[in-house]
Length: 464
Ligand code: GDP
Ligand code: ZN
Image 1 (cartoon, rainbow, N blue to C red):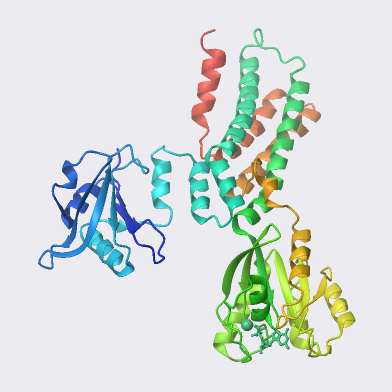
Image 2: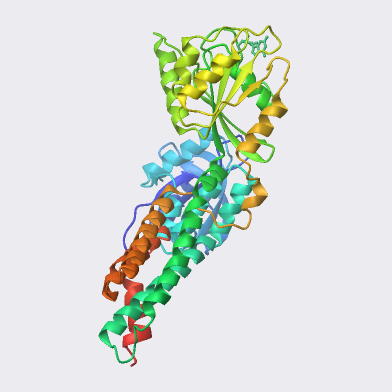
């Protein structure tokens, strides 16, 4: 067994909740905790999966009692990380929690990196890669649909699908290799036709999985929605109207919304992650400029852009400058301040949008009178029609890494298909079959050699 350092972190959310759990994991977890813990007996003498009361004491400060805690002990390997794990249930106040962490660090633990507990669970063989990622997604899940997709993945449905595909591939590879070694017992007559059909099926399966990627990401994160527009057009007011509350600060001083603000909201069954940005305009103000750059960055990453125009002002070069960033983005243009006299020229706007290369979808609202919210939400859900129910039983991929690995597998199987159609000899197929197998393995974090050897030797060559 390798010696790993001991990690610690606050395991609960940092909100104002009543309790804060600090998790400590690693070979030294028990001894480190014993050095800051004072209870009826030492943690080292506790049975696994038992809890005890006690105090956290600072031995360098006259045994000063920092907090009254409950400790829970889970000995290796029956813990989440498969390592010795101690959980300290403290009294939630973030100052105290930090203080306890400091003591743990002084005694030799270090702060865990994000996801490191789950990484150790994976390294310890307790969960596979897709499960590890599902846990991470679950921790981050914002909506119920995302949660249920994570749970599905956690249950291993993606893993099962991938495993099934890999088994098919490994079987065929093993068959080819056996046939080449031992033609008397394994015939390749008609094999190519059968293989081509199977490869086709696999290609289609993978293609289907790949197509779920955008849905998957959107499901996990929400539709990344960026609200842009020059200062004072009413971005914050519209954000509030959508959220139906007064969360963003609305002011008539230009450039108030400097830091971007993120909000999550469900509209007609779609899940939006709203990002409010500073107004885009030419400016010498440094702080404002950072905000402006951020807005452009945000447009690049957006699934949906809500472009706000002030209906009571002429369109100007600031509006045009923003429009130039749109290109092929999905943009909804919102003419605000419909309660005032219309000055902005709609047909000019339409023209500019077309020139920039995006479909002009223009809505008129008044944030002040809260008019137009319904139209906006139905337009958004029309654009992203997939209601949540849609995803429930489907295996979806939501990770860039999965997408890449699946794309590689897809390409490799296409090459197999080409070789078959070109009438290439069978041993040609195996290289690409194995490439596909390996890429698929990356999705579930498995390596190549072991299974191949197992399969070939157990099912074919040996025992003959
Ligand atoms: P932002 O800088 O784009 O975020 O704009 P704000 O939301 O801060 O609004 C700028 C000013 O326009 C404020 O004084 C708002 O009260 C006003 N405003 C926003 N929406 C409307 C509207 O629909 N009608 C009118 N008359 N004023 C509005
Ligand atoms: Zn604002």
